[in-house]
Length: 183
Length: 121
Image 1: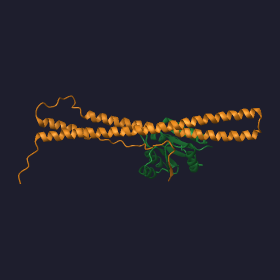
Image 2 (image 1 turned 120 degrees about the horizontal axis):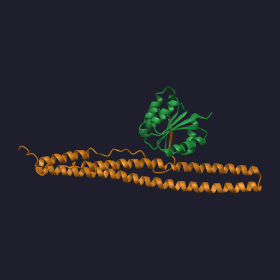
Image 3 (image 1 turned 180 degrees about the horizontal axis):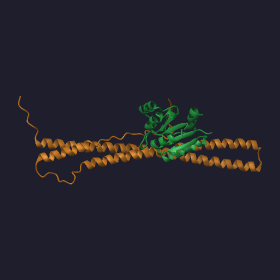
Image 4 (image 1 turned 180 degrees about the vertical axis):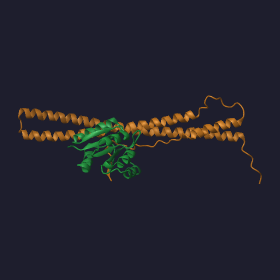
């Protein structure tokens, strides 16, 4: 069996360049895909929250109108006071339910804030990937493939070290109240 | 005398809504902005129930629970997690740390007060 020849410097250079470009592409794509996912999720949550809040505020407005009508009727003495008392109690309960729904809807801020925080982390990581491509101001070696290979290898290592590692903490797709589990 | 609840969350709006909902149900509420603040406030006054978020800057919810369970006067105080996290692995970690329940955000005020009432009356 013939002894294997060491790979040529052109082949090594080719391997390093491919590794570097692939690293930038893969890491960049990972971070941008996560940002895209978070933006879509945020859009869904905001849309649901706004719809929920609009419905709650309109319902509260109508209930307050009906409360005023009942108050006017009470002052005019159209019906017995006991009947109004029941009506007021029912309206109070109705307003309470709408306020509760609004409180649930308002919690979009907490979730979207976490999603924005995650997106900021991904963008910072992406900036790190691009930062790793920086040769710190030094020009590429003019001659000597070994020096250029070493530089490419070093940049490749730095790009590989900047893998995406931001865990998702918000998986909600709706603004309905979440599960409750007592242990 | 009304029962007091310690509400720990780094989101100001969430604390405001928790406070609004629990006070409307007749409870006293102490707010804390993160785990460390919650621990400091729990040391100053023993509360009847702790409601904590998980992901907060500095000390997180699980660390807060572990620290509280290490204190004699908090061994039997109900502690509930209120978080966006819904994974079984996180729930298991909460349970192991000493949480009494897991509530996934967003919360509904009526359901929340129902659970609190069940635990502390």
